[in-house]
Image 1 (cartoon, helix red, strand yellow):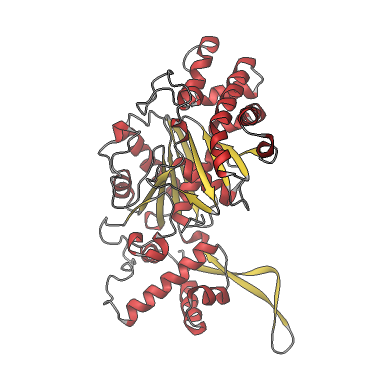
Image 2 (cartoon, rainbow, N blue to C red):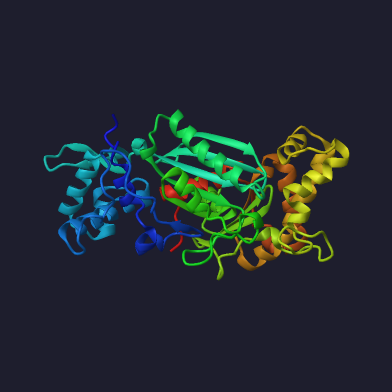
Length: 446
């Protein structure tokens, strides 16, 4: 039996309590709607009450609980840290940190391991390895969900962010709400069972959706670009089906955070992530923070108007970039050559195999994206452009098109210093960003 079995509900209360009530955590989140766990009492005969349930405000028990949450939050934020760093960052005393860390290690919530290439001199002149603290990867699982327009991807990761398993299915996500939610919940349970993780060890679920997501206190049950989902509380539905806290964010923003944290954007604090997939979107990392804008709709790149007399877009506008460079437009452009029934993945495969028509379609797509992106680059001066999403697997044909589009619209002084690269996480970026919502490995802006 794992040492943490029966304790994960308490763990949830400590690393992911009702987040909107904890400014130190909630204030660091980017484009996220947070839903506290109100599904009822903790499950499992050994489950402990969530933090604060039995402690009177101001009591020693309540104070210790808050301090435990601060320690766990600091370990989660940094990924790996030392007791000395926790003391410095939290302001807690050495003795308090030592006591709390010791208890968390005993419960199996934290693990201690040597830090490579670092030794600490003891008072007698000997050396001992320095150690760092991390969340225990086997303490539980985290589910990530990406609802695209015509497919859903479900993934399970441990607390270190390492993927354990995933499911992918083509679905009419935009219009078949029940089938989409059922597939997500069933897949999450199947992945947990295959990994031999009990339901009480599911620590949370992050969801990436193809629509703007507003902060708590505004309407999150009726995404404006997913008309058939109006009135559907995505977080509440999945929370009820899985019995775990659920966080929801915009998919392009989460893709940007994933590439910035785990992929091509590591170490770059000013970048634009462009998701070229079933839809089009962008995520903006500015000065080391995810930029959401004044109304939480920054990055709706696919709905920039590029052809005022063009086709009607799903948003109700006319001539949006998505009508020219989104997945549906790319597939339709190939229909006369390859017949109906093609998917975006099929089109990507054709281009990768050297089909001249498919390569031209993706080159034109990249050029349209680059031309639309040029104005944003002129204003924001990013250090890097990352192209991700399903279409990024095409590689050079798409990237060269983006570069050509930028070159046409930007002055040489800017385009000469602006690298355009493919995302390293490809179609998994958004689901990894959803997982990062829960594990908190993503450095969300303050």
